[in-house]
Length: 200
Image 1: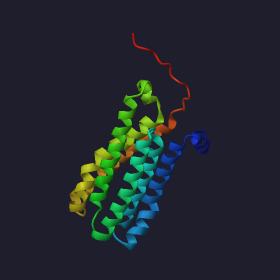
Image 2: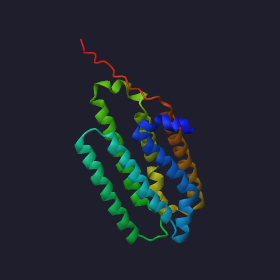
Image 3: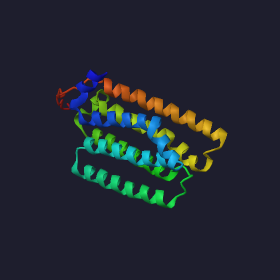
Image 4: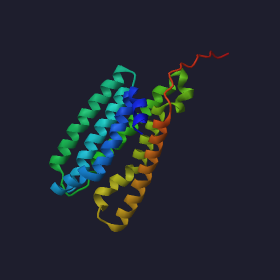
């Protein structure tokens, strides 16, 4: 496992996603529980901010154009200020549905932008053979699949039936996301340039 990580160490984007996975694990096991003792749902609110920051940095590294990189930077800082405002004005006993919904919309927009940029490239036919494709697909599926559950969480969190459905839906998409990320990490880096084949 360690040697596998060092093989992939050349790719900075994979290192960012690896850090994201480690942080998610630590947040679930330790960080969220400690913060939630201080204030209910504080751990979730902090996790949302850090998660979006990591994902934004990944897309910042992924996007090729300067305009896209600037847009990601502006969006990330605007989201940070929005979350700080939400923490200071919302009840601490409420689930942070609005920031999570905004995060989901922004990540989905990042993913759509990535696919749009890839469609304009001549080598996009081989897109599925890159780690970035599987990472973006995993993020797209997770945030699209949990979008409505997180929106309803603020109103219905604490309802036994909703909590059960929340756990099932979130866990299902989380497992699916992690499976796709395993695929992304298992793809060997390919530095070969595909030849340009002109159309007849």
